[in-house]
Image 1: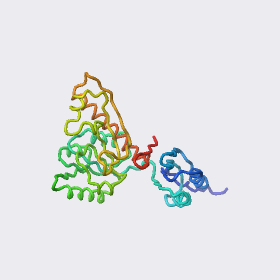
Image 2 (image 1 turned 90 degrees about the vertical axis):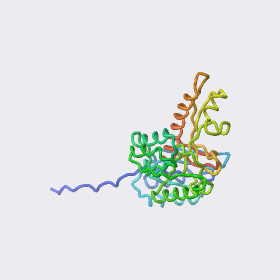
Image 3 (image 1 turned 135 degrees about the vertical axis):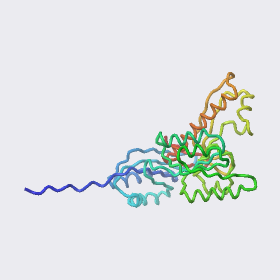
Image 4 (image 1 turned 90 degrees about the horizontal axis):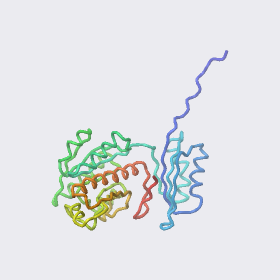
Length: 292
């Protein structure tokens, strides 16, 4: 009788997410999928968009494979080079190292930390930075380091330098402005381009200042909303990722508008952060392509 031997263990399969953008043209999808098919890899999800306005093509796909990252890149490099592709490759579901910046409003911070802990949002909040100390207790409740970095007109440069240091020290991939009531410098915006997400109410530019909801109530607005966008040097005008809205009527008090506004803000921000972390958002000039 021949001795029983164990069959060789199968190589573990990993699911990767690949995003690509490049000038549009024929053969792009075939080049990518053909390279993966030649390896015997399995595409589990695929979305694409060709933008006639910009002339660019966008692709997001997930692929299950036994290949290492280096092997996968080597197989795809001929396609990358042939079509002048900008690309990213990451493990599906990997938690993105995230730094959250706050001031005094707690609703967006609490929502993000709750979703990270209980709803599988693929982020790893490695720290919370506040220009006021008010939300330190919330960060502590969720086990997050809190860094108090005050900002005044005279200390703005030093405060931004501290932010740069934290981004480097904590290996931060994404910065979220969760109702952080400070304007980042043009230089910092450029350095972190495509890596900073902000949330603001929809009343801009009509109702500016400290009491936008009171101003909106006084004018009898019928819609309130929020916009989540990438931060650029153009204040509140970066590429939009997500927007949300609530209808209101004459029966709503100012306090109602504020509460509804906070709900809209946290919903829009949470979706934007999740989609970014899942590599579903691709920059298209001043706009975005979002593969839901």
